[in-house]
Image (cartoon, rainbow over all chains, first blue to last red; front, side):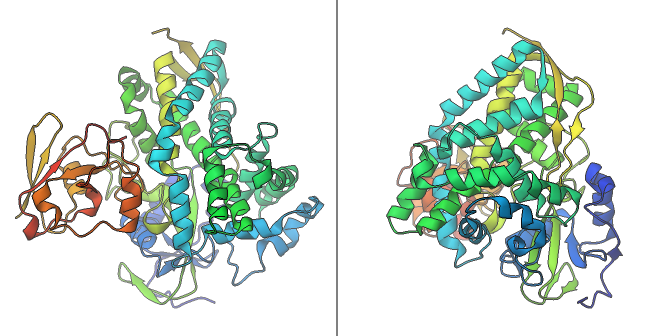
Length: 421
Length: 107
């Protein structure tokens, strides 16, 4: 069904083409320039790529709902993902806990009122006060890992630093067993790749996640967790009757799904940005307290999440354009974050700027509940690097991560010169 | 136009003209007042725009809602009876002269 789109500018872009994924920024500019709301002919949905309208959509959950998913897939028009033939490889997983996976979707998708108790529990699990109590441990873990890698002189900042660090932090906070944590990478990879169309990377991500799904099923339960503050809070909420046991298991899965890839991709992007902008690296070296700003600026400049979707719940209007109900809308946070209407010189990476209006954590009721933790993880790694490394350079070409949703590097070889200060 | 006064922990005061409807957090950031971080963007997600509101203005503020109440449990400096998150304080004519004291730490 095509709504009346006569007044909307139309573009025939494919946000999932290899060219777009490799360098989205010229396409983002094209989308922003076309108008505040654009009709994407290929996928037949709306696109919003400017900052003001992106924020307006995120803040208006009543018109732009999330119950039909954050991805391209529309459960009201297509069969449920898990029932699709593409998911056949997962049938090899013995006793796959599909209920927990459906519960996970129920945990992240609803709008109010169903969303309210879920959001409250997330906020309690990820409250800044709770995260602050783990600060020493997180900062210490970053220092130890950086120390070890810097001693080698060169390392892969994506796999060996960002991924390894975030896996450790999340694993410990949730209480996941140490053995097998690397499965979380393949698990998260599937969860976020399948937000896109059923292309090659989508199918591969499912194929590669078979063992990971089995591992996650096994460990994301009360009995398998060791004491970790977040896991504890989840099952306290179950015991207090706030949520069902199955929902508790689903809550645990939110962490491998949403808390690892996103943060580690952003840390990887930050290190890349600093390695290729020596003037900005020098600023951070001189003043390590800029680490949080550098992380926020990385969220703005190289937003790790590519498209995010809402669905119109009713006929409406946005920036003078009429919208029809029941249509997906793609939001490009990385485009909003480079909108020259809001950010001066948006295509420059400047860690001293105030990038606070960046929308990388979303906005409104579905904004990222884990942002305090993510910022602390970013701050910990960047501070440790800036205190320990004098020169930071690329050590050969980095390998882009082929991914429908994440915009980052799979491998980021860097060469460092240590500094004993 | 109403005014808002920010007092830093060392006692220094900064007075800012406040358009009605602007939040105390946004006014501080827009005018370069140090001591309010507010890095979540005013979304009640970070508790880093904590202020202590001068007692005489407390009753003129709308009451603390549930989400603000939960976030106030997470402030870096101790929560006191006059603690508020400045992203939740919108300026009105009745709040002219509002005095907020800034905590030592926000993160």
